[in-house]
View 1 (cartoon, one colour):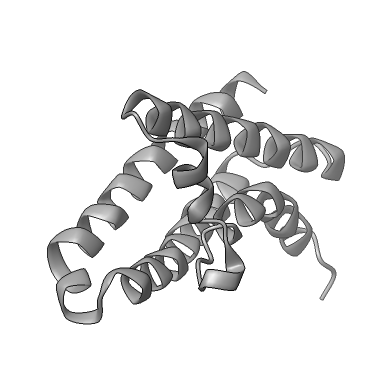
View 2: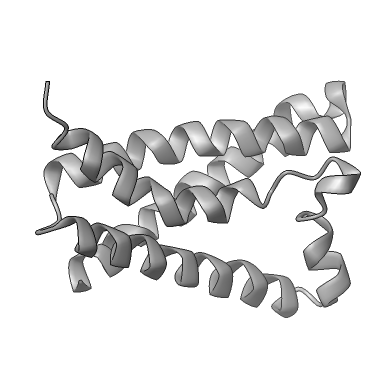
Length: 129
């Protein structure tokens, strides 16, 4: 599991670059809400490419291990996200706002995808033709 711990860190860079692209490029044209929705979808796509590569290159020993990888990555992602948010002085209410589906905020899809993607790509890799 230590290698999968280390393989989580590039996801931070991917997420930061994705957020920078949103803030510096298209958010000014589409607005805050649509900008976050677009960046959520693009981050899922970018994470998909990365997780596919990780699972292909560093194939887990079993389906059960791929589930544990997803849980590990979910926990690390939430600790990072909320840790950075608290460090920046944001309230819990502010941080949870991005998870409010009723307000069109779809960020909740990111931790869900981080949780299930390793298992999905593991199963896809070993799916019989």
